[in-house]
Image 1: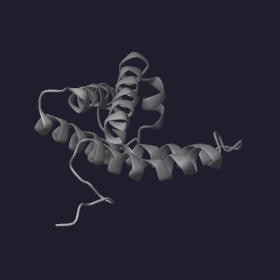
Image 2: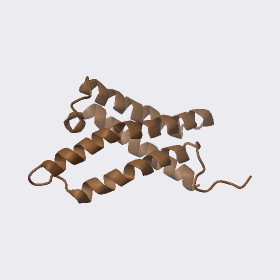
Image 3: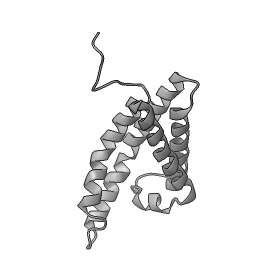
Image 4: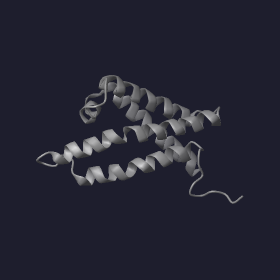
Length: 133
């Protein structure tokens, strides 16, 4: 029951984030590392990936597709971590420290939790509550 509820919450979070990527890409472009080529296309396709991953998590027909949705969103969260680090570094280098540590530190801690959560709600892992064999 908890897993299903968290799956819907995570899917809603990713669907909203994906929509934000598509409708207002400017904030995402501003934190993109300069080394990333075709930044506008990357932001667009990451939005699409978030929406598709969210749909895969909540669709009721295929557990396999749900698992792949969880894997895809976990990989997505891993791949965008450099942009989050870049945002942290750029923001903290500002004279006013931007959003500050109270924003950035929880965000850094949340990233691995989001990776695990996507895998858990997608049914890829039962960790930390594995059943004895």
